[in-house]
Image (cartoon, rainbow, N blue to C red; front, side):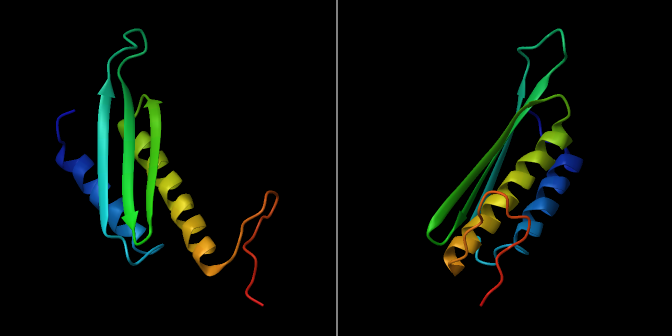
Length: 106
């Protein structure tokens, strides 16, 4: 899809926000793809976010959303959760099903 200055600014803002969750991000690549397969519903958007941190590659996507900005926000939400899980694993903390809060350090 063609670049939009507003969409580029939103992606840059969300990319900078990722540094709050992991300060050692080495790269962040975002692809917004406009899918026109659903003519009866209007165009759909697919967003893929690839983030590289030392020792890991985090990939998230949000497929087929009618609003490009909502798809971008949803994909970045998934990336943030994956980065938080990566940081927890590195610290030796595991998140278990049903846990509503992080496990505190002993």
